Length: 210
Image (cartoon, rainbow, N blue to C red):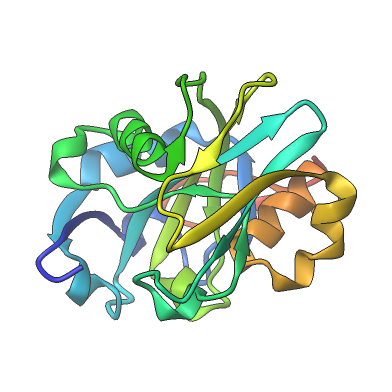
């Protein structure tokens, strides 16, 4: 992390205070346009404590028919706040060489997962959670992809463990998941409402059923 430059967007350009809670799955295009227009690169070390900005994180949920790829973050990971947490999201910060969200997601796919293919990444929506220290300085752009029976494993086995599990298995360990994964899981299984966008920076986002 020392010296790493990451993509951030001014919070006031993207959302009101408080921001929406959960997956903004309808009307996401204006928010993505704000990220493209207002995004800038800044030192990650400073941004982790600066509530004026949101660090932009592509966050991929990988499915295989009825199963979802579940990972456990070990104590070797960079962010101690996520140690031992479970996650259904593959992703990370965007760096200057990534060009855009798609480029950053493709890089994270190659760095984090050992797979002989690159799937189609389908946009699900934007993810926000201002109720945790991590969430207050990050915003997720959530994608879904299908493995279609092809094998997938984690690369950084000292930092992550991963395997496909059933929805019942996910629900059984939901309390051990990081908050973003809880919100995305709830949305995908219909337990939590999604969010319909308003005007970026002005608020007005409202819940809706998935």
